[in-house]
Length: 218
Image 1: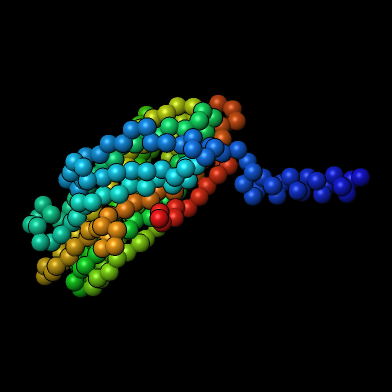
Image 2: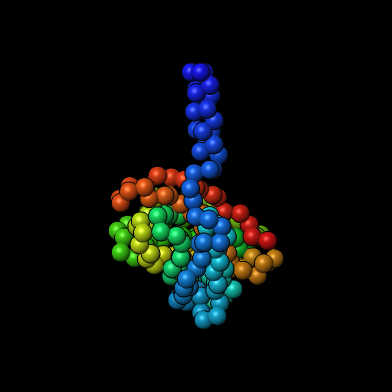
C-alpha cells in the first residue's frame, strides 16, 4: 500500500511538472488597447498580437529604420509601445526574453545596437535586453536576448505594459555605411516577447505555472 501511495504521489508530481498546473485558458488573454509613439514608429506603422493562451506577445513595425544615410537624426530611432492585456483574475506575468527579427547591412567598423526595456505602470522597476551587431554584416537576423531581471505585473490588477525600444547605428571612425531595418522577407522589424505566467494563490504570493519561449509566427 505504501509503495502504491508513493507511486501515486510521484505521478501527481510529474503531472504538475509537465504543465497541468493552472494557467490562463486558451482565448482568455487578449490585447485590450495598443498604442505607440516615437520617430521609429510613425502613425499606422505598428501592430501587436498576443498568442491564444498568452505565452507570446508580438509587435511588428513597418517603418523602423536607423541609417547612416539620413544624417545625424537618422542614426537613432526609438518607439514606445503601450499595451493593456486582458486576462483572467488570479494571474500575473513577467517578460522572459525578446526575439528580434530584421535586416542589417553594415560595413566593417560600423556597429548596430538594438535595446528593449519594459516597465509596468504603477510598479517599480525597469529591465532591459540588448544586442550589438558588428560590421561587416549583410543579412537578415534573428536574435533572442533575455531581460536582465523580472518585473512582475500585480496580482488581480491590470496595468499598462510599456515596451521601449531603440535602434541605433554607430558609423565608426572613419565613418562608414550602416543600416538596421525591416526583415527583407517579412517587410517587418519584429519583436516577439516571451511571457511567463504565474498563479496568485494568496494576495502577494504567486508561484510559477507556465512559461514559453517565443516562436516565429506563421
